[in-house]
Amino acid sequence: MLERDLLAQYGPMLAGDNLRKALGYPSMEALRQALSRGTVPVPVFPLKNRRGKFALVKDVANWLAEQRAEAGKQHKAGQAPEGE
Image: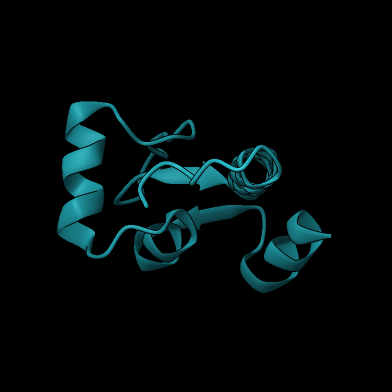
């Protein structure tokens, strides 16, 4: 469902500000830093003759679903999710 919604809204790939928002980075600079450090949580790639980095909607949707599942496990175990 999440993947289908993202695919309908953005097409098969995310880039730029849409990628930043989907991954939860507070600014484009934060996304740029994560790219330079290699800490973006999904595979990103360049496209020939295109500016910027791209990620597949499928990869972003899977990562978001994994984050939600992990938060649910921690909540059931009585632990605060990381970052809180």
